[in-house]
Image 1 (cartoon, rainbow, N blue to C red):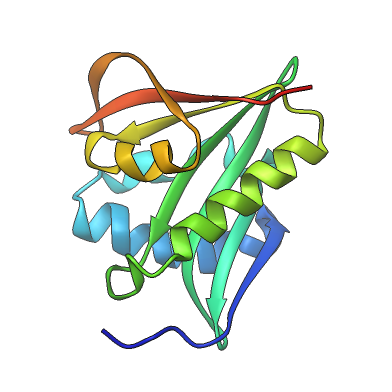
Image 2 (image 1 turned 180 degrees about the horizontal axis):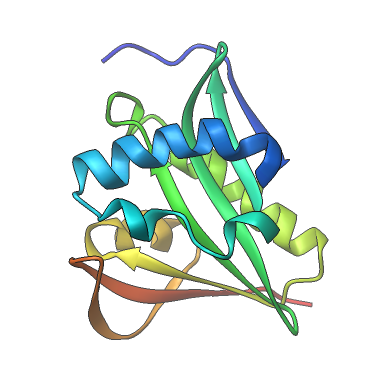
Length: 149
């Protein structure tokens, strides 16, 4: 496995993030995981903050943060291109989104984790909630991170 070069994480609004974020999401969710294309983009994208990971000029990972109101935020659409997984890219994206949520007064952050990704989120303090369910044909479980005041 080739070591990553310099990695840059940028936070952008959807108008600036759309092209790069969608390319990563299309590769990971639509092509790799067979999520129906019509489910990939939703009403939350325009209002979300998007974190994008760049190696050189290439976007290799993305995630988004949605303010649900009342101190509750949701992280979603976390995706890293296959050849860059297990190298800390997802962790850096997630840390950036958690930091952003904290800076905006978040009390808690929720997410819908694919079951195989639960250990990844647990390492960063998220706890499972409820039972498993199917979303876009993939088994998920809700997770939450409670932030101290």
